[in-house]
Image: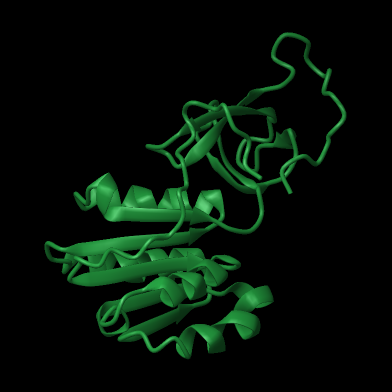
Length: 201
């Protein structure tokens, strides 16, 4: 369950088919594939013929979900090995997207944030995007000191992968960066780093 009460964090209200859309772009990663299966189960007639699925499988979920997504009968499906590859493919589709296109996004918070960032950069309206969180609570974090991004952070303290500074992961979420902010944990008392605890599983 996502932490509530963080005002900067977006709300993920679940995937809901838009019966008036002319085309449906569906981006999912990992366990987000389950949300897509449920979306198709609720979709009206004609939805499948207008749907394009992009799935970043990853090694652990590829076999489990790929076949089931292909069986949904979407107009087209693109299976990609990684999220960056999916984003490249999605970018190309968004370049050619027309009015009436709806975007559905399901996966971890970091994945949703990156897809949203890309879609909003193409001028897509928030109301044209449906999101659902599925999978790990791991955070995508930006070090405020070097501006580097650290992916899949599950602990409240993490060493920046770029500059090495020990960071305290904050609850402030930047929609622009699709990441949580992290600051030096020992700025006031150098060398005093609290025990690392895994809290974002």
